[in-house]
Image (cartoon, rainbow, N blue to C red; front, side, top):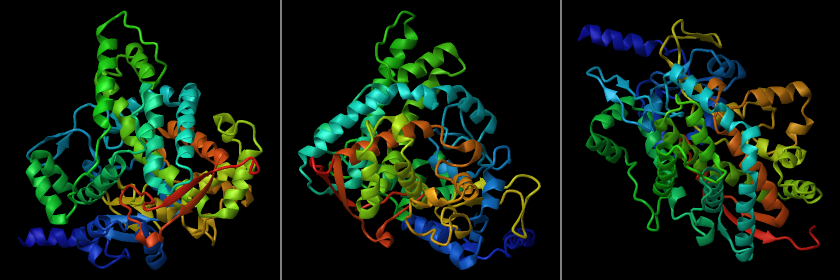
Length: 498
């Protein structure tokens, strides 16, 4: 018993020099309590202001908000692997041995995969399919969705709607068109059937479980254990009354086409979409297995529908609540021929700055992207962090560091990207976790950019936007972050506006 206590005491003392909330040093309960209550963005804004560039947020976890930490932890080849937090986001059930070590099957789970060799192989396989040069062929599919979107929003005649829901509708419709040549009928029905709200509440649960890896492991062994832990922490949730998930439809449609394509040598499919390209990838490279193929189709929706909706929501919310900025961006778009063409939109400076600044101030992730310190430890900011310490940067905190983004870093100022000198602008671009970090950047980045850079100009061209954004302290953010409760009116432009 004395040996065990000595070991525990020594382990606790390794980070005793790191400042932070007192309770955080002795238990993960403090961190989990704040995650449960949706205070992750708030902590990102406040902890480093109080404690400095290095903050202890758990018995074995430290947050940083500096460019030095960003490069040390997230640079390619740094050796920092994803922490046990990602057990809570895993799509597949692992084998758990007697020592509670998980061993995951060889399936495609890009967010949660911690086998670096396996992950690199998967990324190399799908890389060419997800380059902009390949994805641009689906631009017409997005154009068709946007035509239906504009018509539907015009039919509302400026009525006030929930911004979250409508941006989620647009995101899922775009993904459906690009991946499966399919519409989930959300635009037609004017509702996402509660699927966005349901998914977001799921991140509340995942955020808490991720901070207790033992609970995540035990849930793999027993669902009832997971339900008990959820009940104790109060993170169970009931689906909305009108809830209708769209993932079963995605799975059925994908399975039918994959089965037909892989079981028949002479199968013809005239659809030109991402699934067809993934099937072609499987046929040309059998190491991209049928299992990988099935998982990748689902991943497009699983990884994309919430993150795209979050990004679009934040951009429209900021645009609709900042009249001067909306006037500048609108003028640029209205004076441009075909502003929603991807090649055109990505060259519009005011539009680019709007998107960059929104993603800086309101990143999709509001918890740290946690990594494990490798053998040899980490020497940083006059501190030593031993191997197996969990370290990371909270994007909210990193993106509000005044040494990187200026003394006005807490203000929404898109023009900062235009007025900064070349070195400062390059520094701001590099020190960003908007798409993840290093070798683990989002594989769907170019797909998301295609959608965002088309949706925003298309909406601004047709509508003036009026948004009512609740106070930031009313917003709830977990590992995934989203502005909620924003009310918006899309007011059709008149000839005079143009």
